Image 1 (cartoon, rainbow, N blue to C red):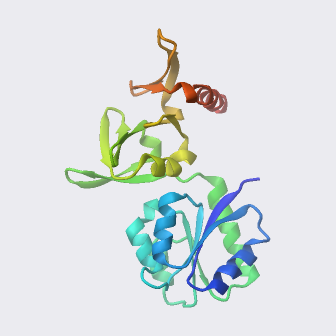
Image 2 (image 1 turned 45 degrees about the vertical axis):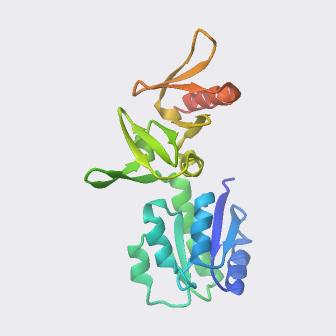
Image 3 (image 1 turned 90 degrees about the vertical axis):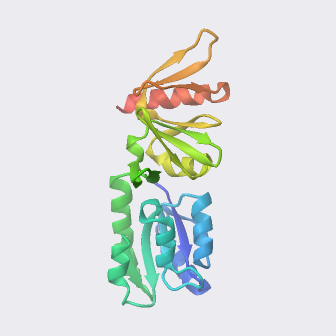
Length: 239
């Protein structure tokens, strides 16, 4: 059975408890954390990668809409707004929310939301998107376009074929975001997309190399070589 991680964000403890109680009948959804305000939500999203967030709109300091604006819709999990007001519905769907629940939420209405969530989460893995700066402003890169990623100080260098882009995010945080899109750690400073590997090759010294379809050769650390080889074999068996 699939298990999806849930973040609950509401400044009212009773509302957070209510979501937990409604989720209790759906064991495929596991609560990862609870947040009391938008600042906590933004901090949680930096260190974890939930699949779903039940997000209150009116929270102290940073509200739900501001969370999405700062994080950007491309970097948000599936969003279900949970609010006591119905006048924000149009704005919520403009922010690419999956659903909009008005408190108090009935079990039947919550069940409909769960069915909608499961349909989205089961039928397709979201192709993570990364917004990177360019000389003309910015561009959006889909994870499926990326061959490999390497750490570069406080940035990561994202390689798409022979071109690369710098993006201000730690490799560890980005790894959490793109792992579901088939990326695996090659060594301490590099992630590789399994679909982009043409072959595994041994050097004369016995070290393992991932030869990418784009021509790049990524060394695999000895500590990770067995796990990396197994992941490549599994990927080949699925294709």
